[in-house]
Image 1 (cartoon, rainbow, N blue to C red):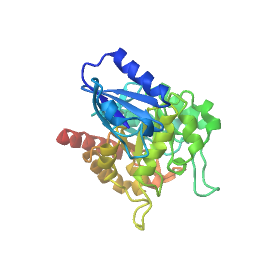
Image 2 (image 1 turned 180 degrees about the vertical axis):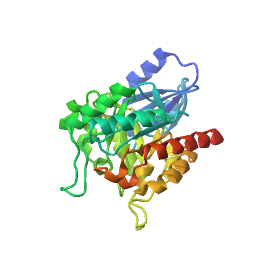
Image 3 (image 1 turned 90 degrees about the horizontal axis):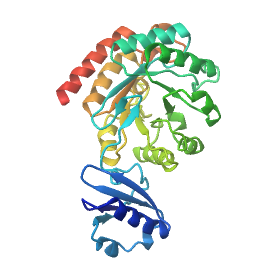
Image 4 (image 1 turned 90 degrees about the vertical axis):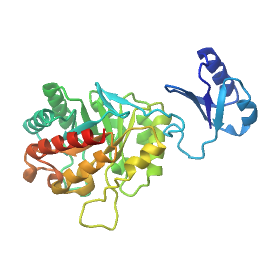
Length: 333
């Protein structure tokens, strides 16, 4: 349930109302917009007399929310959430490109790629240190050493870094990582999500391979319910019957998510398609659809990459794509 307050309501009036809600066992989530203040009520709202509430002089309207996700719901928070990562903002008209290799392989590799993508306009650097792989014999990442090398690239370029966390026991290793990524395979690892709800870092939450948008929003709710509201959603393709691409990019997820949630929406065209030759087209389509950012895999030598080389752009290809993305953004502005 949400209660929308009238304009001009004082802080004292709002706090008094929240204290009353709390006295009947509800928790309040206050969202201040440009024109309205919204109080989201979480708990057993059956005890709330809506007619009595609407009769109060400070209440404009009261609405029940049937969706199971509350804090992630745009009705709770009409204004788009802006996630700030070291001055790089996602959402609310802000757009960022995250780029870098699927996996950190060496100091030379990660720093070479970091310098290249920064020169082409990327504002955050991605790099995997822990890699969930289908085969137990595939390269699993450099783990702690990979994080160390990623942070060396951050020091060299000044780019904030994004890396995937798979186990909450490794959280200390990510102390200086700017954005924690939850991969598709962990989207419903609820113990991990609950723990990330207690940290103060932005979370990039990827959609599972066979999950609905509602399930994605419920996973975001797990994080937000713990107190961490800096969540970004990532559409990275879903598994369908199609075999010509690695996954099927659900471009429609961008406008649909923007309708239902205030959280920023990022698109991963690399994992969606699985082939570098399709990344540019799908990245441009996602940009035109209104994505708040892109996460793109770039490798200085894709043919010899230890992980996902087929879907990785070269620095030269990324440079050309970044220029096209800028033109698309100008066209839809």
